[in-house]
Length: 151
Length: 124
Image (cartoon, rainbow over all chains, first blue to last red; front, top):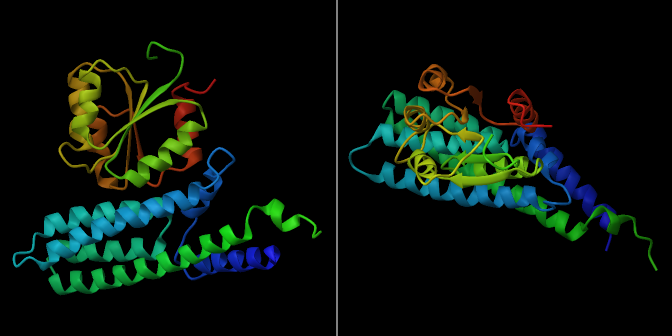
């Protein structure tokens, strides 16, 4: 298996995530925390992020479905989601969360709906890209594998 | 300091993912770490007789928010160092008035954490 090629693909995918604004410098902070003691730290926290954010988004969906919209509750949920996005460096999602909160403040339900659809799309795209990235990293293995000479 | 020489930290944040990040940062210093999901459980830790050197306190949490938890701890006479860490910039004054020692805006970076620990002399 061409480990070098796989690592190049992973690096290219990662670069694209930053260049296209999906991730910001906060993601570097997470990568810096990964070491021998926590070798899968980044993938673990990313997995946690998508699990928790999916739960939050389900709560927001339910709240938006109600006939009487509780903008305060929606704002609280979205603040939580925005906080998680900030911590992982999910830049585009963070921006969209802010837009949603603005709509909450204006009690603009159509605006909230539109922003939330955008958040869901961004969430899905980011999830797919990061899953592909980690899959490539797993296939490529640790750096030592890439440099091990063929027998 | 709490009775043992190991620095004891209480992480108070309702976000599982955020607690994981803070724990990983703090593990680097070999600190003893406890985590709870809200202010009410944070208070309970102290009511149960646990001692901490440092509390990392989020603001927006269910049951009891970070400002109320901070105020309650100070009202109980708990002198623990409390660092408010939130993305709600508008809550700084409220937190400091409630008795927080420091206020930081999320996201917490490793260098921010190190600076805070140094300022409290938790790093030898």
